[in-house]
Length: 158
Image 1 (cartoon, rainbow, N blue to C red):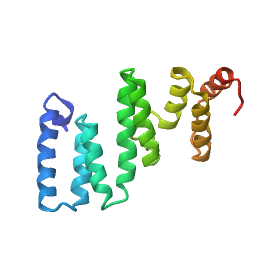
Image 2 (image 1 turned 30 degrees about the vertical axis):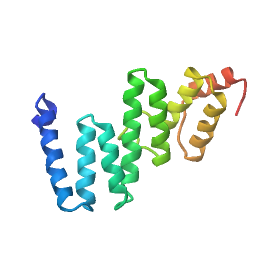
Image 3 (image 1 turned 180 degrees about the vertical axis):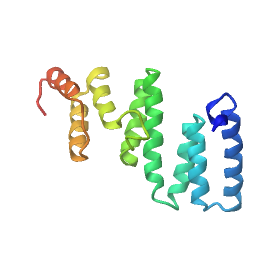
């Protein structure tokens, strides 16, 4: 655990990725190795490589769909933190298309993040309302303050 938490963590993840890559070379259908490779890439901050691993895994294990949703959500979160809102919106949309991100795996809800983006950044209120309806269908909560802001700015109630 110390290797993961200190500056040497990257080299540990790089070594793990090599090991999982070798396992996949021996057995390209090894869904567990693909899954662990994706997790290793995610832990190492290599979201795009994680998505590639999970996409390959999806051919063998439907659980990879959840991993993809989480990976795209985390990519979206990183873009949002860097104020790269358009890139964040694309990643959040891919997260939603892959499934619903696990609220324990991703710091932001991708649906609520898109409501925020379409309300505050692009003023695409129809899209924001679509996300609100999608959240309701999926039993996901959108903060009341954001809903009130959307109502006020869009001059709509739904």
